[in-house]
Structures are given as structure tokens and as C-alpha cells.
Image 1 (tube, rainbow, N blue to C red):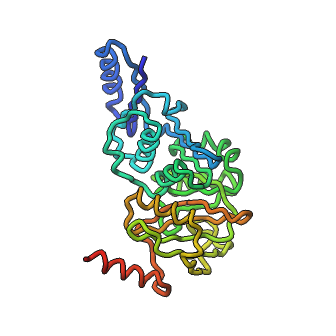
Image 2 (tube, one colour; image 1 turned 45 degrees about the vertical axis):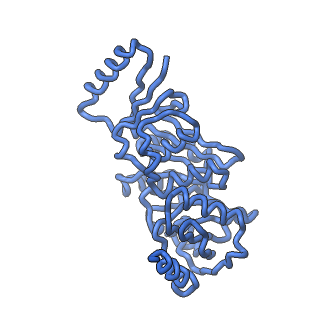
Image 3 (cartoon, rainbow, N blue to C red; image 1 turned 90 degrees about the vertical axis):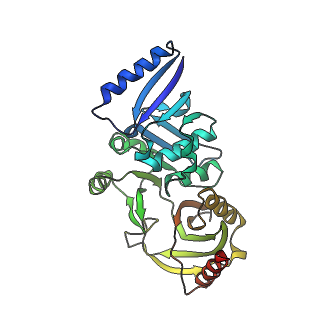
Length: 300
């Protein structure tokens, strides 16, 4: 028997009607398929950074790949997560509705991470739980990520909504403060510095390193506010980072983007952490000049 997932946005007063309709669909098919109903509050996504394509997505404890078909119903209510799931299903050659999800490329946190991991680009270990699943999966987070780990709102901007978690009590406090947000969790990577790479029309234009003040509690990498910035000449930027940045920017259809990496302290490996649209450009360096040239060229 075929197994079909109906993933709804949330429970509603029409729940009984929906369930009745699903049973009717099954009967009309001659019971050739079984419909499993679930909601956006039952999603778990785990991205490991071990070699190979190591991404797992579960709905209500079931691997999403075990379904013959996934129907995202009212999917626009949770775009940042659903678009990542649609992309994953496409990679696994699994059928889902609707195809226009593949053109959305929505979200700056989860989808680029899934894409990068699937392309063999190094990313931190990453976990997404629907908000109501976080509390019951705290033990898994600690075992998988260790202390400290990073808690990041999918709506975070300019370093706001990104936290270093050193005790479990912090998670509940943050959830209450940001009660309407969804979160991803990532391993903390002790880093020498962070790297911001700017791409213009999908080509790397400039790069700079940013040291941070560890006593601060606010920054996109949860360590501190950028204290020192240093321009990295493109000829000294590793080719691997250039290729990764251009590939991610093109995937996200971001003509102008800023890609952030953590440079791990122990071995200098670069971990992609996120893509930013409309990044701030330092006019003191050649970034401003290159951007002006890019704008002028784009007018022609």
C-alpha cells in the first residue's frame, strides 16, 4: 500500500472534516493508499557534518523518505522550513506537491545550510525542531551538539536572536521571549575569527576577517560584536571558499549577498553558517568602490 503524507500548517476547527475527507480519498482509491496527516509542529531536521550527504528529516518520528508522496497543504504558513524540506525531497527524488516550492528559495538560515551540506560544503552540526518539540528533545540536543551550543532564531538579523547556550534553562527563557519564532540549533565551533565574503552577481567581490570581543553576548556567531576587521585579498582567499560562496549565492539567486563562515581554531577549516541579503559594505575599504562600480555596470 502506498503511503501519502498530508502536512498541514496547524490543527484547526476543521480537523474532523479534513480527517473525514482523507478517509473518503482512501476509499475512492480502493484503499490503494493510506493518508497520514501531520502538522508543522511535528518536524525534526538533523544535519551532521560527517563525510557524505548526512541529512535526516522526520515528521512525527517517521523518516520523510518513507512516504511515497508528500502534500504540503497550506505550506505558505511555514515557508522557511517547508522550502528546505521540498529541496531535500527533490534531491532524494521523492514526489511532493507543489512544485512551485522549488522556485521559492525562502529563508536565509535553514535552506542554505541544507543546500551547503548536500553539496559537500562544511557546515556546523545543525538541528531544527518544531517549537513544541524542543523541550522533549533537549537531551538529544545536548548529546548531539554538546555544551555550549548555539540557538538561532530563523528570523535573526544583525546578530539579534542568536544565543550561546550553556545551560538548559536558557532555552526555555529564550523560547518565552521569542514565542512566535522558530529556531535552529548548531554546534559551537571555537574559532579564530569569522569571515564575511561578498558576492556581486554570483561572483566573489571582496572578503574580510572579523575578530570578536568574547565578553560580549551579541553577534551573528554568538561570541561578540566584531572588534577588528581586516581585508582579505582575493588572491589569498582559499579557492574552496570562493567556489562555495558563488555556488550558494547562485542557488539562492542572490545578486548581492554576504556569506559568513567560521574559521575553526584548531585546524583553520571554514564552516559556512549563513547567507545575508543586502549585506553592509564597509566604505572605508574597497568594498564600497567595487559596489559602486557594480551598480553602474548593472545600469547598462
